[in-house]
Image (cartoon, rainbow, N blue to C red; front, side, top):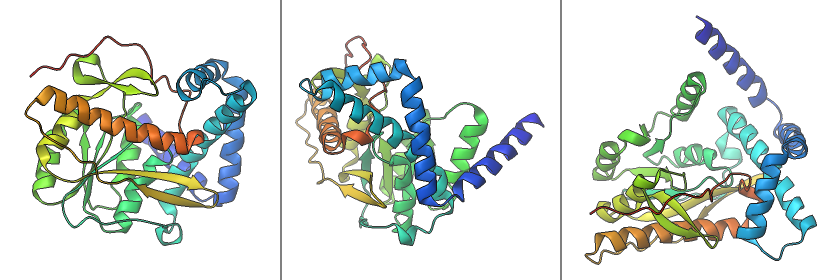
Length: 287
């Protein structure tokens, strides 16, 4: 009973936020981001360290802090846009989108306004499926799944049970979208270079792209003033050489290099306060 009441209150809150005028909502959540920037010294320090050691070692302190502030405000504004998108008319904000004629593997990252990619794909009537990581608490997970599935054109595959669903989608010439830069335990990952440092990414994403034989297309969504821009990068040429380990390592590196390049173009739309470079032991692939 308590969970149902909490869920109802959550839906009422989201309904109120979703019906704010877009400009007002962006300004309000931008102010929340500014307050967060002022109060959260720990994440601000982490962001400063990431920017000055990973992004640009020569950046001056004033410019670094300006970028950190933009990163904080962008993150909060993107949270508003996720809620606001529940009731928007997609026809009004669609700028650029493409539709694949065969099964496609869309890869993206925690960058820009990634959560809105699902409605953009749906608008183009792409038969999409996506992989998700369950979130806590349970009422938030329930709410997000309900909203992500509101278009009824595809499925959500939980991260730990996604393989069968992805394979079936590709067999039916359908599209699968996946965020590739989530941090994973060492035993599930492969080491790649990201802004000059080693990080661990999911090795199964690279392995799947090698085995599936479908186009792999990087796809990102960024905010530009009063509209959004969908950015497609050229299809990634995934090659098999016969050495599975090297193929996976090379492919995973290709993916993260593309993510690094798009972040360099729009650095304010990346959450620099996120400790993506947290030290982890070296990951060894098992044949």
